[in-house]
Image (cartoon, rainbow, N blue to C red; front, side):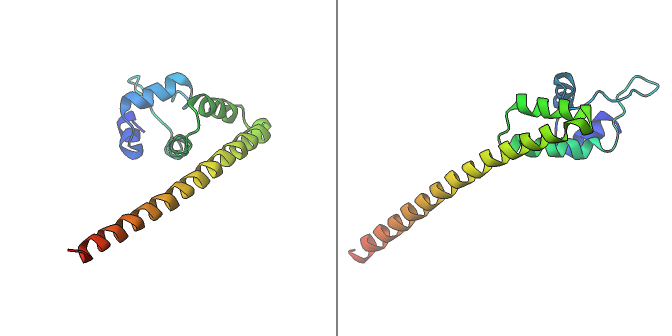
Length: 123
């Protein structure tokens, strides 16, 4: 699959894909006869997973480490699971904090709606 096709499917720019390759997040793909990158189809799923890790705030260094472990194969299952478990706990804490913040925002919005209604009834 050409780099432009991967970019289209993942929503990442060609420069970002090259950067991911440079820092080790994705494996350098084989090259076609013309020297152009020829990515395997499964790279789409891997990039999607990396995007999810990024969206949840996993630091880039941890994503790179995870990619290195993935490259090493089955012998790293335990370490990868432990990394994901630790990150899952970080996500849970962030969710808890966001839920608390959302509840506060709900209370504030309700307060202002009440104040606006009281203001209208006094006019």
